[in-house]
Length: 176
Image (tube, rainbow, N blue to C red; front, side):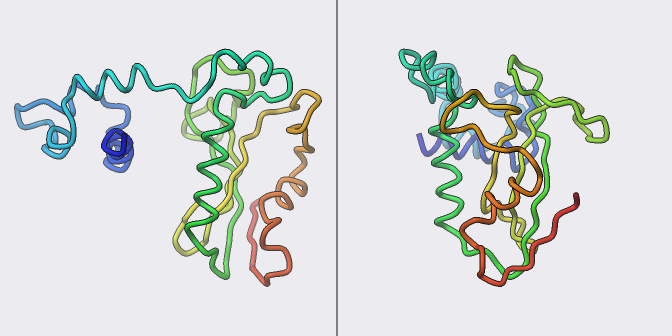
């Protein structure tokens, strides 16, 4: 699974994440040797088709109180790892990102001034010098009644993202 995850990350770093995965394993000189040396293409495609991050048996129940139920566990672990593996510098920035996505999702956003007009809106707290993601929150619109229902005003989002660093003398920059 580490090799599988590494291949996905490397494809993103090399800006090949929208390339047909079969092309990454070609031997005609256009493919990359590192993909072929990490894992067989058929094994990668099998793992890609089989991997799931959600328990289908409890999904309906969880979706009653959380629009991010399908990815909540994985997202929370990712954010926790970001927080635990890096110390935020003196200067930090909070900004919104639009992750391109046109699949089926109830909270897809349309932002006309972004390069990708449709996608998932994410508020991100980054270190200003290294651009390391330290905390993030996916914008889901109005959540159903339950533990994940929170105010989506900019000041509340800022307070939630900066909560662990309140009173720690950090310089925070936001655009709006």
